[in-house]
Image 1: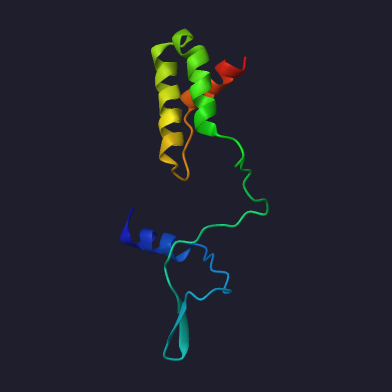
Image 2: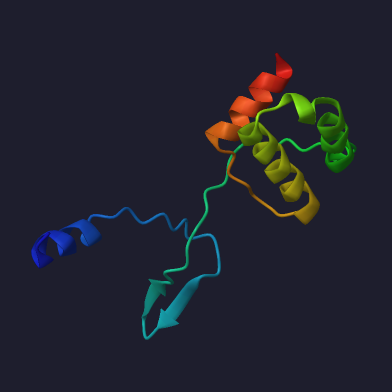
Length: 106
């Protein structure tokens, strides 16, 4: 990609600044928007189940089905267990994990 094409692509990027926050900095008589990364807000909040102990539930599932799973499925179940132990934020579920959940629900 040439420098001119790259500059055109950069200049054509849509600005998602909504102008209702405090990220504008006054420089002289002009305002400039910072280049901080913005996240989109969704109308519906995420669904959470705080009254469910996910770690205890996954351990119970492990006790019931672990010996019936193939090694790949066992690894996926271990990864889910590790995620629940770490209390991390977001987690991308892979196809293997979805396949395991589908298998367990059948």
